[in-house]
Amino acid sequence: MLQELDEIESNGLAELNAAGDADAVEQWRIKYLGTKGRLKQIMPGLKDVPKQEKPAVGKRLNEVKTALEAAFKERQAAAAPSAAPAGAGVDVTEPGLPFGQGRRHVLSRTIDEITEVFARMGFSVADGPELEDERHNFTALNIPDSHPAREPIDNFYLDAANQPGGALHLLRTQTSTVQIRAMEKTPPPLKVIAIGRVYRPDTHDATHYSMFHQVEGLYVDRKVTMVDLKTTLFQFARAYFGEGAEVRMRPSFFPFTEPSAEVDMKMMIKGEYQWVELGGCGLVDPNVFEAVGYDPEEWTGFAFGLGIERIAMRKYGIADIRWLFENDARFLRQF
Ligand code: FA5
Image (cartoon, rainbow, N blue to C red; front, side, top):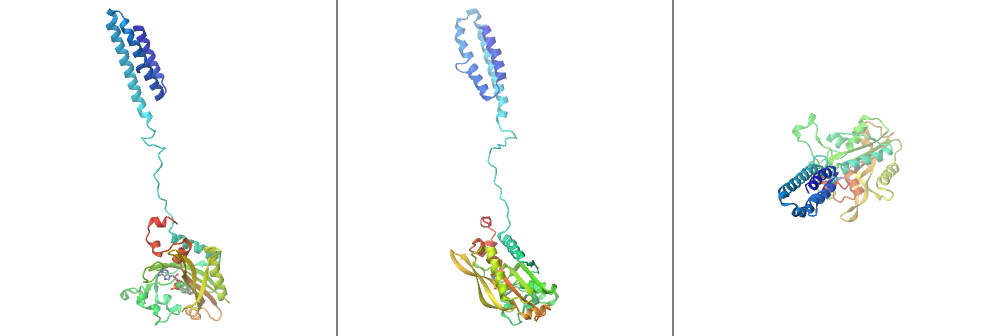
């Protein structure tokens, strides 16, 4: 029996050493230390051992059992860390944390898109300041001193004590100011658009805000007519909104154009399609040409000014202009 115990010990330790993975170690445990394992099987043989040898055999049996159990525990402890995934406890199979991807504001994208459509029609981009003087916002645009558009209640005038050069200044109420600046700088012919912010003390509602954007168009050449204007606006509407775009022009009045018209497009508001005023347009008034030193006998032109927010609302089905400025990521993420 002593010989058999020696064999169990040496074979057991060798086999444990050779066990390649956790499964093999478990199989080894069952084979040697399990309830029907080699050690348990040998125990009944103890009663047949001669009495005087019993203490030695019993002692040896305990030694072998202790040795095998210690080797098994050691092997288990060594295997434990390798059972964990590599890389300091990082489970590479876990789904990653989502991270929000930024995007351009829907208005910035609309501005880029509109610029591109007009660029394809041959318009270049002109620019002007948001803080304007009376001349560019009113006088050169044929808006006389007594005109109601100059009323303090309709404009953000600067504090009179702080007016640069003593001239009356205000936040521009329309991008038509850039018509004047472009013509002052450049001799005719001219084909420009200007896109930017304008400011009016309007009460906020679904289609009005106190700061909004306009796109201004100005085309000056010989023999420009209303047909050129209408064609340009329809081409824009179709290029931007698609072939089915609905546009209508209604006779109107602006001091800086003659004749003048309103441009309307149909859009969804509170679940219903409604006509919404998108902008104004007309043929440049001869008084405006005179104010910038263009000869009105030789040059003709058309101009238009459209609300960018209204265009974006039409294009993306946005029912309320205020959502564009609330910066609610849940709204902005949709575009
Ligand atoms: C003008 O501002 C003229 N300068 C347009 C023009 C240019 C006419 C060139 C002729 C030749 P009006 O005040 O109608 O026109 O404004 C033009 C557009 O700006 C409106 O049709 C509308 O689309 C937009 N708009 C006006 N007020 C607001 C507002 N409070 N909030 C948002 N959009 C507005």
